[in-house]
Image 1 (tube, rainbow, N blue to C red):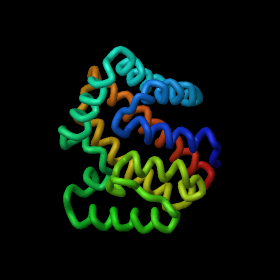
Image 2 (cartoon, helix red, strand yellow):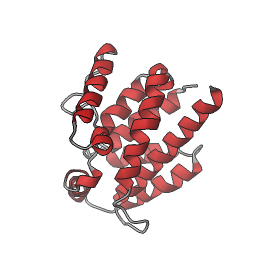
Image 3 (cartoon, rainbow, N blue to C red):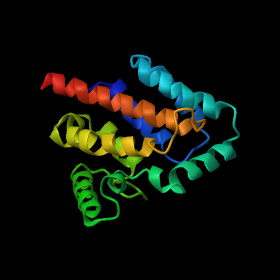
Amino acid sequence: MTTPLTDSLYLTFANLLDYPTPQTRQQAEALLAQLQPHPEAAQAFEMFCRGIESIAFERLQELYTITFDMQPLCYPYIGYHLFGESYKRGALMAQLNETYHAHDFCPQQELPDHLPVALRFLGLQPALREAEFGQTLIAEGLLPALEKMLQPFKQQTENPYFGILTALRLVLVRATEKELSHA
């Protein structure tokens, strides 16, 4: 069952996993408050909040670039992690584009398998998120991609993006478990 809070979680995660803006710290504080019903995710997300609170905005932008754009294992593209640069990734992107178009959603300047784009779409389409398409995208796309994105981090990492990716994974696992229990 969807709630505005659930929708907002997806949208805020999407915003925070995009390139940092001057609103990033404020959005992080809001997300931390929203995650209180998810204690494990909130604990993981606190690492992100602590990590970004004391660094300069320009350094946060640099850290984002280093984490997601310069380390191939942590590219924020679902299809890349699932299929590499193969025709299967192209097929996934075509399917995502078709679904986005059918629901009047535009990924803007990004590829359709960009993690924040998929999260934004799911946040704006709660009925579709709970349907087979959304559940498949989460279970067979987002979760496996997040597992691979988390691999290059070490548990004791100081990179705050480890915290947000871990929190997102925990929220998605919980959402998937809830859907399975309602099926």
